[in-house]
Length: 155
Image (cartoon, rainbow, N blue to C red; front, side):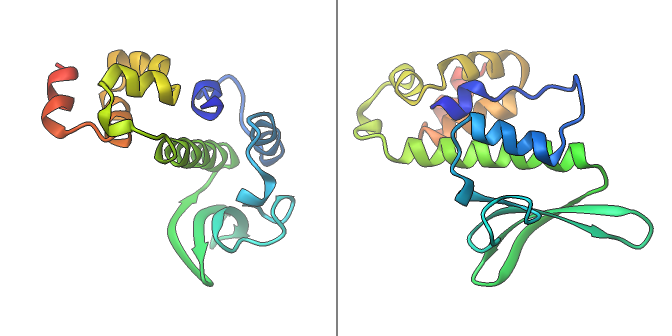
């Protein structure tokens, strides 16, 4: 669960594509799991999250998308490198966190606290519960907690 525990959204300085690549390397995200405009990560954008840069009508645009079987899905367009990189970092970290959760054996037989502990999301959830209820709900849903229990936990 290193991905979830290590990621902290900071606004101290702008995040560049190179810094994004360095952060993903630090988090041990495999390079073949993402594509950064052909500069970093995989050599192609098939079956992975990707960021490309293009000239829009009036300014540079940063497209973040997932490409599957040649079809781009979930396209988000940004007008600053920082916004695009932070968005992609969160998406990649979330995807890897979700994939790791799916591999946990016996999750449904655990209490919520056990699920949070085993997944490595205890600290992130505690912070989110206080500051970002939407994120806290997302974490609990990933851990397959039912909606009624989520409502009770977050009250």
